[in-house]
Length: 445
Image (tube, one colour):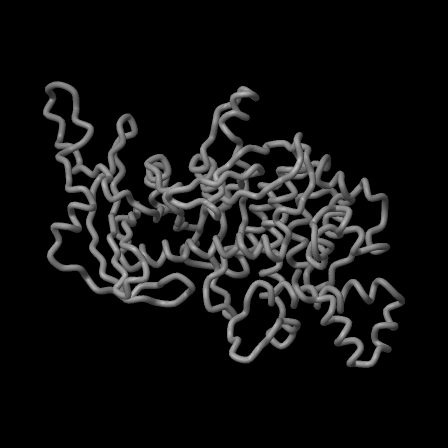
C-alpha cells in the first residue's frame, strides 16, 4: 500500500467500487496526481513515482480506459464520507455550476464549441473548444478556513446538441443534467435534506418544478428574472368550462420593487465568508410557464448599501425560507467558482490528454474529486501537523494551495520517501537537509 495508514479510512470507502488489482493501480495514480506538478497525464504520474508504481504502464492507462468501475458510484461514496465525517447532521448545502476546459485533438470524444464564461462579456462572446462539465459540490465550512469550500462530488459531461443529434440520443441541457445529479443524491441519501444554490442557468422553471416536487427534502435558491411571470393560484373549479391553470397576474418583480415605499435592512452572509448590510424586499407568487404549470416561489430583492454590487433578484422554492437565509445561500454559490480557479492552478484541470470515451468521462471528474480528497486529508490531519503552507507577514487564512502543500509534504515524508529506500536513509539526514528536501517537494504547482 503506497498510502500512509492515516489515509486508509478514506481509501477503504473508495476501494469497495474497484476490483483488487484496479484499486491498487488507482491508489498509485491517486498519490501520483497529488504529488506531481505540471500535467496530470498517466505518463507524468508514473514518471514522478518511478519504481513505486510497479507493473507495466499500460495497466495504469487501462484503469481509465477499460477497467469496470463507475464514476457516479465513486462520487456517491465520496459524498457519503463527507456527510458522515464532516456534515453529520442538518441540511446539506449544495452548489452547482458548469465549467469549460480546453482539450487539444481532432478526435476527442465529447469535444465541442462552448461559450467561455471567463473571457465573455455582455457585449462579446468568446468560444472555446473542449468539454463542458456540470459540477455538483457540497459546501463545507472547515474550522481552519474563513469561507466555505465547495467540494465537488458529482460531475457529468454535457454533450452538445449537434453531437446528440449525430448519435441519435435525446439532448440534455446543463439544467437537466443537474436535475439528474440531484435526483441521484435524493435516492442515495434518503435521510438527508438539501439546499441547492445555482446561477441563472440553473434557475429555470424546470429545475424549480423538480425541486418543488421534492420540496420536503430539496430547496432551490437561484436568480429570478426581473420580469418573471408571477400569478396567484387559480380559483376553485366551478364545474363549467375548462379549469383555470393560473389566477390573476401579480406585479412583476421589477414593478413590485418600484412600488415599494420601504426596504428592510438585513445583515446577511456575503461573498468571501463575511457579512454585509443590505436592503431587501420579499414576496411570494406562483411562477408560470405555458404547458409546465405553476411553481410557488418566494422572491427576494436585495440592494447592497455600499454600492459595490448591482441590485439582484433571487427566488427560492421554500416559502418559509427568509430573505436573509436565501441571500446567504446564493452568495455561498460563488465558492464553486473559486474551486474551478484553484483546480486549474493547482491540479491541472486542462492537462489530461485522453481522447477515448471512457478516458474522457473519467479523467477530468477524477481531478475534480482530487480537490475533495485533498481537503478531506488536510482536515483529518491534526492541527499541529498541518505544516508546509506558504506564509508571509499578515497572512491569516488557509488556502487550498496550503492544504495541498501540507498533504504533499505528508505523503513525501510518511509514505513515498520511506518506501523509496530502506526506510532509514531519510532519518539519517540532518534536520536542515531533511527540511530543505521536503520544502522543495511539497509546494503546489
